[in-house]
Image (cartoon, rainbow, N blue to C red):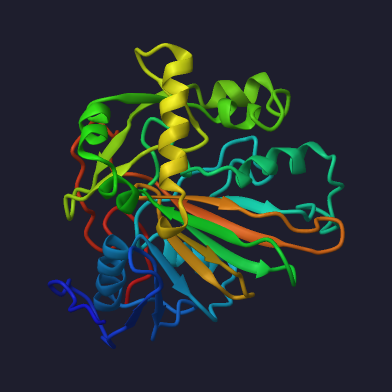
Length: 317
């Protein structure tokens, strides 16, 4: 299907409609007809943004981006987050997902602290839900991929919410969960984060159900960073979170992406969970560069949709 662009914004444009091909009955789409290694015109980005709001996960094949090109396209969605110190690329706008040493390019031993930290990426999660203002979206670029393994799986929290019994929807409305990076990492190794790293991102409260400010659709806001339900006994709250996660990650709500070099995948952290899958980290090389777009407001605030390029240095022409 094709989207009509919104109102044209000032500036030079050369509009060519993109092709949007749905991947599953409930979410995800492959986007064709755009070269992201070049500056994206405003009308084309308006179509991309409309598809993002509709499908939650967008797949762009054959986009051999360098870091500068990835940043330029990412900033079309809004300002970028700075990565937390615990990531090897901490302090930059990139979150590095790799078994390669950032300085030498050599394979990192599997028992290295950096690899242990990354194992938590194999838990279902939403990027930056542990921040007071959680992220809008993530953009992951495949620079080097293994010949087998290392896929990424996505689950639609909108479809999962829609499929809940009415009684469950009533039960969870208005509830909040505490989200913590230290909690999610502790599920892999309680010692993998230093006290300084934990102090950088203290626990925050997030609503259990989020509402998209553009289309009004509701989504579960759960995942590995969600520790417990605020105001509930610990065991009871964690049981609810586990039950919701089991429901939300059933096959009808999921899409598994097999990476090719040059893929760029954009996903809505307000509406999907994702997780990495294993690969042979000793035998194969894998380098994925992630940029993360900051959210508009705290989840308790109504927020609004940014216009194309607002608050960013996106390279529109």
